[in-house]
Image (cartoon, rainbow, N blue to C red; front, side):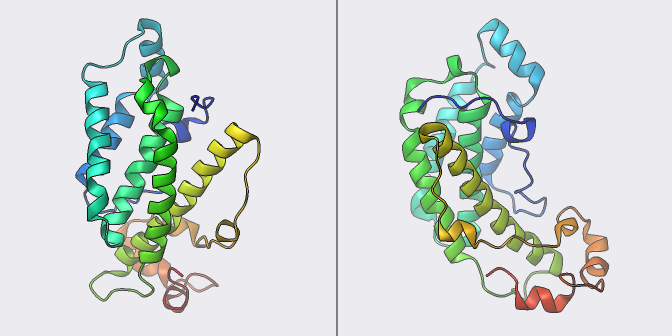
Length: 220
């Protein structure tokens, strides 16, 4: 698969807001974000292109990360494991399709792109199926919201990425009923709000903000 044309800075650096600050730490996700950050600026990309080189050890880290992604597949049993795995795979695809200059992408990465697309599609659907249908009593309202909206946004990001790849390859993208009916939370401003202000914001009067809305229409 050829490298896709450069997109917006947010897409190319993997900074689209689908990974919440409340997301539990993940070694796999940390490795992928490190790869993104190493070539995440326009200056770094221009410098790499001019010198026809990338930071020392970059490909070794990328290879190590991809091996860890494959090794993690047997451990994917619930949303706690599927969420960081799916997010990591999304970032790897963004990295190899939108960030790395074409001349720096080894043939084995290009040759396995289709396999990663299929893996991402399966992981995304498993994540949605494993999503809890109610708020856990062990989570605060802010933590529960972060989990629910992270799952929504991660699935949406996976669908968007697949659409980009399909349009580039074939010129068309078949919209599924799953994609059409997928819910997106209307309470957009809650995503970036601090924990101390979340309780007050969630109880704000108005449609889509009250606790009744959270309980009735949490994830599914």
